[in-house]
Length: 277
Ligand code: SAM
Image 1 (cartoon, rainbow, N blue to C red):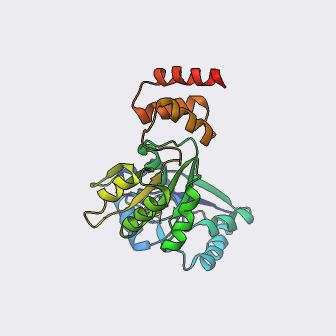
Image 2 (cartoon, rainbow, N blue to C red):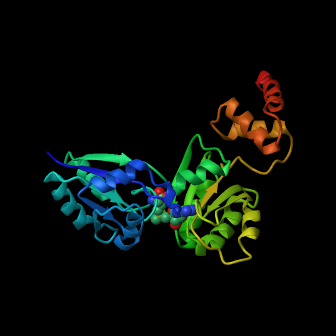
Image 3 (cartoon, rainbow, N blue to C red):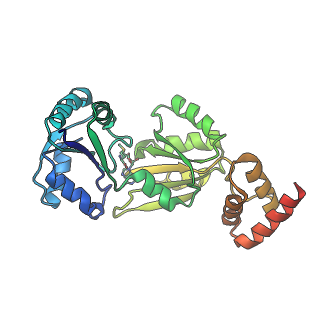
């Protein structure tokens, strides 16, 4: 009988975000595959987990996946972790997981933190559906081509970005997606200097241009239709209705948030509009 591969999420900054189950699984498996063994040893020491570590990173993924698969097929259970958050989410792991699945080895998720979900959960942008694009391209040309696509985007777009590229990315966003595009930037989540910025692209550029930006961050762009309130509530209702696939209920919620009005007031306005249709 093969062992199981446990894909285990670990904290994105705050060590208390480890789950009980994650600790138990990491104690019980024969071996833990980690991106950076020295980095992960600190986490394991904190929880007195003595299990051996082996490196598994983007430069040895292919060869290592075969070695780990062989051990799983011999009956050992293994865990996969990354430096922070959920493995395979903009992190190594895909190759090992797909090899295991193809070979009929059981792959088990041990869910927990992910910067992507944590940022979405506190940003105040629509999240019924969203698009995740991983890291924005490092070079301006590639970045700008991708940003063009976001001009027709009806969902919130989530990206990872490095602090030293944030200002350049924001300049491109202002130019291509518009100075009034709503966005949020979640920085240093779960850590001492946690910050959630919410505003327009132009406001973000002003906010992050004074200092050298530090720490890790997630950049969230609101749907293209979500702009600073302008015109009347009725204009906004019409724009959301024409430019998105959202239901009237979702539109009313969104417009009420945009204008800071009670939902009932916006709902009444939407009924008049719908009657006319
Ligand atoms: N697999 C990880 C996850 O599930 O969150 C993401 C790995 S990716 C290589 C690392 C990126 O995630 C960082 O560059 C940053 O964009 C984001 N990130 C990680 N930790 C974060 C934190 N505490 N606050 C904000 N963003 C974070």
